Length: 252
View 1 (cartoon, one colour):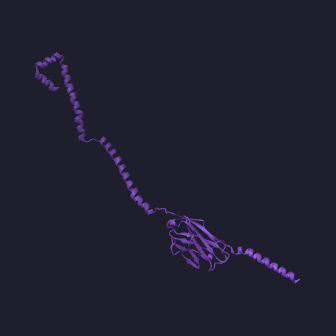
View 2 (cartoon, one colour):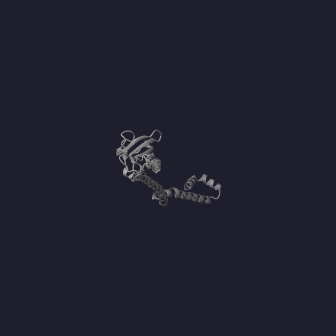
View 3 (cartoon, one colour):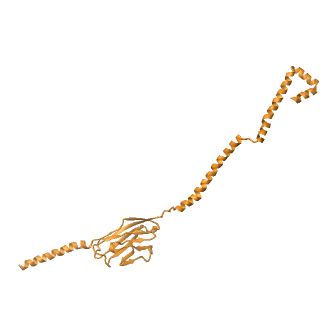
């Protein structure tokens, strides 16, 4: 009766080892890293590369965080930041002096910030977290950073300067032109409505007096012709009395 019991015990041990071997990878592969898929920034901004993770094990001194960068033009990823109990920022390269550690392992945060981003920072950033024994699963995640030129901003002082040096002189010039257009019209109307005594005298000299002279000449000649009834008598009188003729002509 003892041998069957030993056989059953052996079988149970084999089954237990088989189950442990089957489910063991699932127990240790439970770390998950998450980052935003895309991030947009303007030149000169400070950008936070957000990275969070979840793990079934509490963070220990063996936990590590690595950030790598692959340029937009392509190429191999380059690790530029490392964390293991403390931060190790880059000592050379394009990110020197521009990386700030923003992580908190106790809260599952492994973020960093990039100061004064430039157009050459465009590319793919990968966050990789290791927390033994959780070293499998999804320990990495990527962010695509797009940096664009910064648009010029218009401040209130710039608007005030624009109004003072452009719009105000334009308004003054417009008012002057309108005034010059209206003033000559008023002057012409006044000149038509009012004439000085000199202009009236000149008008009377050159306008009315010659007409009166013509009327006097016409009346003189008309009276002279009414006296003379015949042309023959007129010519005879001219021959006989040249003095009278001169007198008559002078009267006309």
